[in-house]
Structures are given as C-alpha cells and as structure tokens.
Image (cartoon, rainbow, N blue to C red):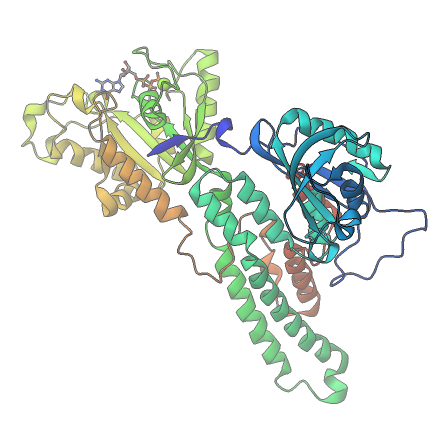
Length: 529
Ligand SMILES: Nc1nc2c(ncn2[C@@H]2O[C@H](COP(=O)(O)OP(=O)(O)OP(=O)(O)O)[C@@H](O)[C@H]2O)c(=O)[nH]1
Ligand SMILES: [Mg+2]
C-alpha cells in the first residue's frame, strides 16, 4: 500500500556536474523567430555526446552522439561484426533508422565491444542534427573509455550539457516548452499520479490548449488594433468593440477557470505535504512509523521526544506525499524544544493536509468509560492546548489516538462534547466538513493498529478528492509549474494588455522566449537528455 520513495528507486541520473563545457549558441525555431545571421565560415556546430542511460552496470547502455560530425564515429570507431565485411553502402554511412550490428573500436583499432548502432539523419532526428546511438554492453568502464575517446575525433566533439539534446529539439521547433517540462517531469516522476500528469504534458496536450488561447487573444487584439488605427476614419467601430470585448471575456473566464484549481497540478508535481501535529506524547511519531512501515522516528514515553521535524517521502496509493512528524506543541522554557516547536508550527502552516493527533486519555481528562449514557451537556469538557487548536483548519483531520488505553472507546457524549468544544472555538467547519465525509474524528490506536486501516482510507479519500487529476477535462491545461500562471487580472479589453497576454501565453509554450526561462528549464535535465 505504501512505498517509501528512496533515492535508489529513482532512475539513476547522470547529471553529477562533472561533465561541463562552454555554452554554444543555437539556432531558434524557425516558426517564431527571424532567421539568425549565418555563422562565420570558420564556425562549426559542435557534435555533442552523452550516455542516454543511467550510471552503473546494466545489460545495455546507450551512448548518443548528435551533430554535424556524428558520422565520423561510424567511420572511425565502428567496423562490421566478426566475419563480415563492409558493403559499399555501409562503408561511409549506416542505413537510416535501422538497427545494425557493429564492432565498436578505438581510433587505434582496438576492439572495445560489439553492439547495435542506430542512425538518424538530421531530418528524422529530434535534434535536427545527424544522430548516432551506440547500444553497448552496460559496462561503466567501457562508457567512461568512450567518453574519453570521442573528443580525439576532432575539436568539435564535446560532452553534452544537461538537457542539451532536448534543447536542440526545442530549438528545432520539434517540441514546445510545456512538452519539454513534461518529459523532464516524466523522468523525475516517482509515483503513478506524477507519471500520468507528466505524460499528459509531454504529449503536447497543453501546447494545444495554450496555443488556442493565444490565437483567441490575437484575434481580439487584431480587432482592437483595427479600432485604434481605423475606427473613426473608416467607420468600422460598429459592433467591433463589442465583438472584441466578448472574445476577451470568454478568454478571460477560460483562463481564470483553469487558474482556480487550488494549485493541484503544482502540488502533485512537487509532492503533497502532510504534517502530523499535536501535543507531546500523543502518538505522532508512532503514526509516522506506521505510515512509513519502519522505525523512522524515535518513540518513547517521554513527552517532548521529537525535537526537530522528521520528514520522509512516501508513495501513497500512487500519490507523492511528504510526511512530516513534528515536535509536540506546548509552551516550554527549553530553548531547543522551543525551536523545534517553531519549526512544527511552520510545517503545519505550509502543509496541504494535517493530521492533528490528540491522545484520548488527555483530551478527556476525567472521563469515565462507564458514563456512556451521559448526555453531551454533562460530559467533561475536553482540553486542547491553544497552540494546537490554532493550527486546526479545514484541511485538518483530527485523529484521536490511544484507543486501546481506554477500557471502552470514548462515549458518544464525549465525542459530542469535543465537537461542541471545537464549534465553540470557531472550528465548526473542521467538524462539519469531516462529518460530511466519515464522521468528525478518526479513532485509532497506533499501538495495536485499531482504526489505522480506516484512517488510511480516509486519508486516501482526502488526497484523491483534492489532488486526483486523472478525470480532469482532457482539454483543460493543468498548471504544473508556477511559471504557467498568467497575470490574468490584467487581461482586460485593451490593446496593450492583449499584447501582453499574447506574449505571456507565448512564453508558456516557448513561442516567445526569454533566455532566463529557457536556462531554468533545461538546467533541470540530466546530461544525455
Ligand atoms: N497505549 C498506547 N500508547 C501509545 C499509542 N501510540 C503511542 N503510544 C505511546 O505513547 C508514547 C508517545 O508516543 P510517540 O509516538 O513518541 O508520541 P509523540 O506524539 O511523537 O510524542 P512527542 O515526540 O513527545 O511529541 C510512547 O510510549 C508510545 O508507545 C497508542 O495508540 N496506545
Ligand atoms: Mg514524536
């Protein structure tokens, strides 16, 4: 059910920062920018190379080479397999897009391996440059040797920068920025929900949506510009302004609708933050350990055991969840504990979901299980410390723990009293909201496991209700990055703002770029991508 997201579960990423090389200017997509001036005669584009597979031993590893001189690798570092000879055709150029078995040799003729070579000429390569892929035996030593040997083929050969292959594809107009981000997120996805979200973005679905919004803005802008330029002279103002206004209003409500998504896409991409809060000794760390299915946090009977935030990442039913166990909330004279409590409060304030753990034996101090028939009005008043109380909000699930320590479960009267107390403290929505779904409180024992399965179900329901995007309308773009937000308030019916809107929409897909945005996006890639 739960799977810890460990570093080892990720795709090994080759971007260790050890391969660096000077930046090279690239051409821009022809569709959106004026053609760049031709390079000086002596300038030759680089031929870049990098492993396309992760580090470490494996059955196969792939070395990708792309650039004008890529075929030099075919000519100088490959030979027909044992017992075969070159045909005239394969002597200087490999067949296009066909797997072909070759011996891989060093420039001095030493045979290094036998593997499959794939060749994509520029018209069919994503980078729009001749591209070779060497599918080798997955030996790290062999890969390292080839990375050392390739530059000896000529001074245009160099190791690729992180994301450079993808950047070439973007610059060749084969992908837009949202697709680029989708691919990066797909590689980084740790859970099923993240994978689905990234795959959707990588498929170009968002590009279509943003492009259509941009076209609508351009149409409205054209009407406004016509009005500004010719309106009075040509007498075309009749109805045109109204038409432009309607277009803008429709577009504006479309944009507002998709921005008003509670940052679901962004949260899902980065992980849902769940904070476990409550007074000391309530069983918060015990609950974290149960969620993690291991002894992640120290549990003792000493109140104030957890001092700092203990955080771990879980795959919770396909959703990426960062769970934070926090210090018990109380007023204290201990300096170290006070810092821990400050951190706990900060975690709680930024969490997407909170589990507020309250120990039954302390919440109902003078409770007597035999008073099960006592009316709510006569049940003893529950006690929640003011700091804990202040952090309970409508995204908080109240967990009453230590159910086993009670001879009997808390009575309906006691629970009623707790509800009344929360309402009186202005937390009525916490109770009402939770009740609508499955009763106001989750009753559990972190010690003997009672109620924990139901708590997990409830948590799953909450996560799905708020963050499951799988049934989101196909055509609705999902905002997965902060940069996808538009200053929508400024999209009003005037030419200047429309030009701004068109530009902003173009920046999302990369039709209009800024070097800063591009740099930021491609820096997030592995070398070889
Ligand atoms: N009987 C009983 N004891 C529990 C339960 N859950 C936790 N405890 C005990 O309560 C004590 C405190 O548990 P922790 O999980 O460390 O509590 P905490 O809220 O993290 O405490 P602090 O870190 O001090 O804030 C330990 O002795 C646990 O064994 C439970 O469901 N039933
Ligand atoms: Mg603890």
